[in-house]
Length: 224
Length: 224
DNA sequence: ATACATACAAATGTATTCAATTATTACGGA
DNA sequence: TCCGTAATAATTGAATACATTTGTATGTAT
Image 1 (spheres, rainbow over the protein chains, first blue to last red):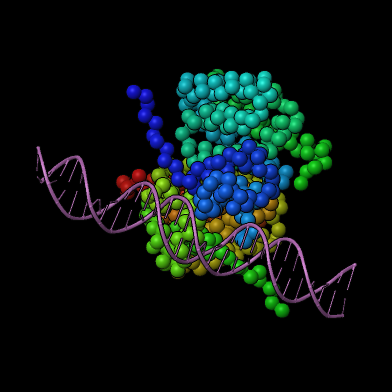
Image 2 (image 1 turned 120 degrees about the vertical axis):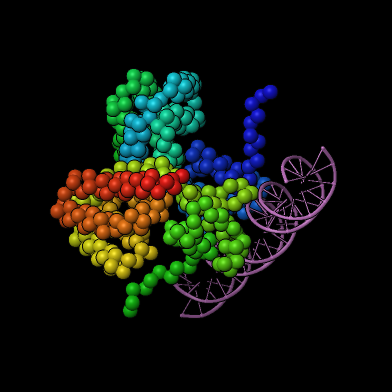
């Protein structure tokens, strides 16, 4: 007998919420793009009701902005916004990793190592599509042992808001190799149980993404 | 001519959202209490649609939990949850205050001082009702100068999730005077421009609330 | 030609109605 | 009495219908 997966009897609202969240994160919907309720409901073959409820939830998550009687716009973050959010992430993730390392099991580390391998495959085929998801998986694997579900949820929320922009930076500046090297170093520090060094390094890792994004935008002259 | 207030043409959804949020924060709805859609819609004299949308939003804010086909429950946090959230707050608020102090204007400090006065009035009349709101106002006045809207919003969200519990601690342990004394000290440090001391002190201020709550619950024997 | 007002179209907001799921009660058998 | 089961009620989920608001186009006056 196979491990009886719990049948996921999703409601339409949650299904639509997840789908829209993914599509926003993937960049399918651009910054500032308007999401029309009827278009979405037609596309999904549902009424506008679950679509509206999904939009409400995504708004509270900060992924879109709803203006009364006008509609929902995909959130457009300024450079300052992104830098500020990365600052928060640096603080939270550094603290979380420091707490996690003494408690990481071999399984945790194996999980992270496995994700790193998938990274390499994606890197060789230049497959940027799953980069964001893999990135989340890697970091979450390292953090899980800290047993701080609320912090983890908060970090995931922040990830969701910043991923599009950091991915843009990675894509345009072709620094996937560097990011990968940093991930490898990070995993090594975890394996050595070097909590303090790892905490400091991940802080650097996150903030340097912000710096790279900043200098890229400054040079391109298309900052908002 | 009076300062033409923007006419607030609220939608029912946002009106209901705000009202429900307030009622949850005030403790009118207890931990784990179920919120029935029809009861609420009758009470407000609206249909269930705006109520449902409001609930979705509050769920994303973490104030309630929606279980498919079962309904919405007011979030019930364990002691560990509260301590974890206070930990995050300590980190964020300490960092934010450190950034704010060098930029605080006289107006900012006057605003904070004014809120402190209202605290004293509430303290003398033992009026605990507005404690949470005043507390938020005081802290936000101190933080505003940092010009970090995203951090501020995040902190407010965390406040919303923890306020009921810290207020319970204040109420039961009769430590309003102590909290007030700490606030006074905090304002003094800001007025002196002592960023580092203030940052460290607010960290202590927040974490000590957690400690007090913990020892209270441990002694009462009613921790969850 | 421009500015303004009006009429129409499109999108969102809300109420009502119907469908699916869950909780409760009543009943029957061991 | 206890347990399981069928029937029923209560509640939530979703679709449809209607109301309100906003955007656009047309027309008229200056």
